[in-house]
Length: 145
Image (tube, rainbow, N blue to C red; front, side, top):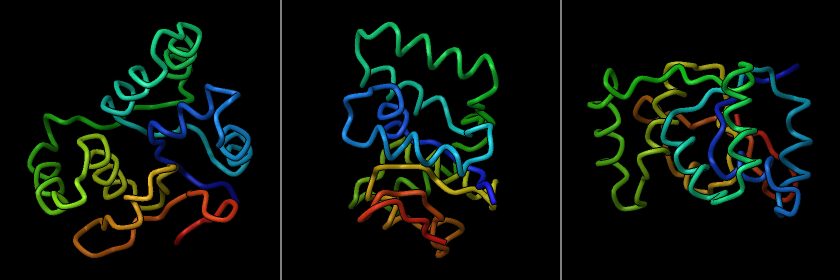
């Protein structure tokens, strides 16, 4: 059964860069994921920064957005209080703005897993104390319920 997924910047970079350590893992996970991949503007910004001047990658990202492969259902203007609460709660990690937005998306899209390479998501909780479901590479691909 295919999963709904919320994509983080590290995975997006891995998908775009064939030389990335996690490229083959990330591509392999796509067969188990139902489009669209959900994300937020902060992830697009981080990914754009991380891929740098590789214009091909930037074009691919915007192509994914235009074609609906990636969707941004999140509005920070409506979610700033919840995002701030998450960032304050995890200030010792610390939690990035993008990570807080993704956790908040996972609170709204309860049947979605966060597709990430970031181990900080193993610490984060949604809705106060619930584990965040992940698609995360740990000794091979592992789905954390």
